[in-house]
Length: 133
Image (tube, rainbow, N blue to C red; front, side):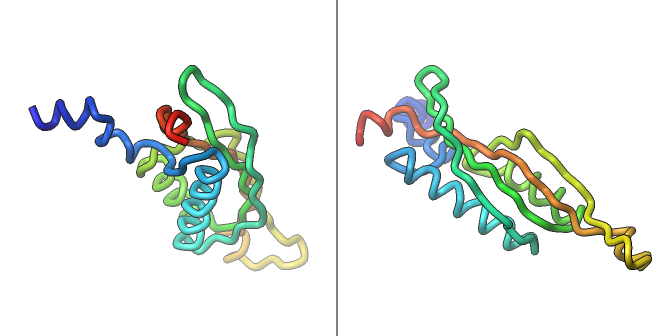
């Protein structure tokens, strides 16, 4: 009964959404989440751009376009952590390009090159947040 009551109150679902009372605060929280995850994965963010909020029924989708540089294995772990964690985040439009220097024929560099990575990442704002703000 307690679990059913908690679900009907929406408290249990709060962790699924990006925290923030407004779209701007949610975008800032999303940026911080991505920045922290990339830093832990030893990546380097080149740029982030806040995407226009999109409405999906009663939900608002908040997103970022991210450009970063990192190695392949940490990138795989980063993408997994972003998509498998809370709040629920979704990665789309993923572009990966190897940056291999033609001047050096160092086998370590060609086997595990730095990658130029671009992707969109988004999550959803809690529907009742708009009513409370």
